[in-house]
Image (cartoon, rainbow, N blue to C red; front, side):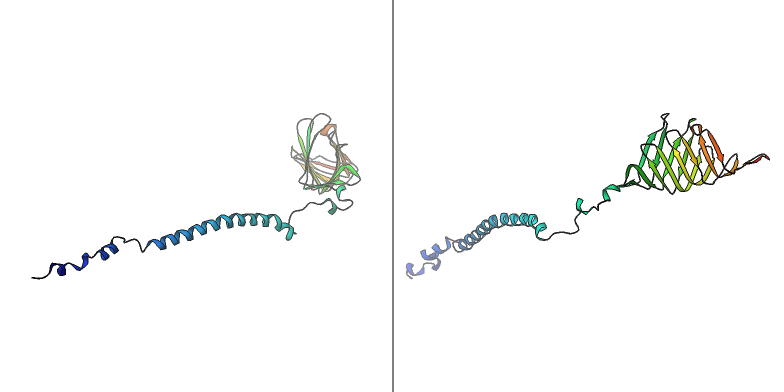
Amino acid sequence: MADPAETAPPNSTPERRGRRSHPDSETEPPRFAARSTYSRFVATMKVVLPALAVAIILLVLVWPRIVPEDSRFRIGLSELGPGAADNLSMVNPRFQGRDNRDRPFTIVAQKATQVADDTKRITLDRPEADITLADGAWVALTADSGVYHRQDKTLDLRGHVSLFHDQGFEMHTTRVQIDLASAAAHSDSPVEGHGPAGTLNAQGFRVRDQGQTIVLTGKSRLVVRGSDTERSQ
């Protein structure tokens, strides 16, 4: 009969059992190392990120002084010439007022420039004027250029001057002087006109009685449509 001590199973030794009872003992050191590396990374970022933010802010503040930008919009009074302030200009101006009988008039232009030696006078490019007459009718005027005197309420039109009445009558000349306060106008330049009633030619004209009367001056010729009437003076 065999000896019982010699037939004991080889896996029942205390040494081998002790090795199996601690299966995680060999994996713990790498886990602790990873945690330590992550902690050092977080601590470093807590210092680096605020420092980087401060550096960016300082760069934004200091950069314009280091590298000046010539294309920036600047205003400098020293850049104005000696007479530049006396020749103020305006694009698409609009002037409104009323005559002696409280009737409105309006003046617009492509450009207005203040006269250097007279602040009350304004030169106009491509002016247009609308004037209300006594009976409620209106007259519109256009010209190549003009001068508007704000204090006296006068308008001097030059170039290709055209006058249009709301009844369909129009006249054309090269210069017209208008008194906006009294709704009067006159011209000593040759004028030609036409409308529903006929045609006219004259060496000048006068608008009187708040726009109710037009008087032809100089050598004149008037043709009335619908009749054989032709008058010359």
